[in-house]
Image (cartoon, rainbow, N blue to C red; front, side, top):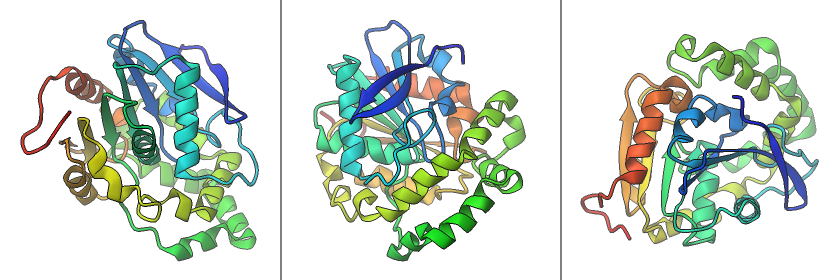
Length: 287
């Protein structure tokens, strides 16, 4: 991806982002866990033909700052997204956003805590609809954490875990695959994942009450899911589609957890057509 990295301060921390395209419509791209904005690199060139594209590394990931012992929460990430949008002069009636996996959950939090921000949303294989047992916090205890860190960031295990994000990993652009694999192996980003684990209650859509507020989202939402997703079951897509009052569901065949890397042309086309469509979906109450 030839677009030059930029840096901006939000919440007192340095964030990497990229900006490309000159259209009046803005598309914000938010990545998933153990990832970075580079996860979108195969779709950014195509999307930038229709949008001013902004993609940002979340706090704790990619090339953004990774503060130790940060108290992460859905509210924190929503605040950071809002500050980022303000500082990049992106607020307005033509602002759209796409969130993948963890980024989808943070995008929903952003849309609920800062209503009227977005005109349409795209959620790709989104997190936020799974029950996370409270005991899961235990994996972030010091002794357990170090063992897991050694395993998860090892070359063999990290590649195995990363490959599981795709139905056919050998079909993914090799340069993108290797670049994003190295991001997934970053030990500092693993520390962020452990910090997220320690703050499960503040990052859970159910426990924070945000899932119960999804009916407030009266803007069109496109839900994209791979039918072979091994990380978050395609069954979850039905829940997402049902709980959002104005949603359209697109299932990608023979696709895993990462449609923007597995089917970049189809992903870009599907997103673009949804954003510029005037359709109100049957049975839903779109604004």
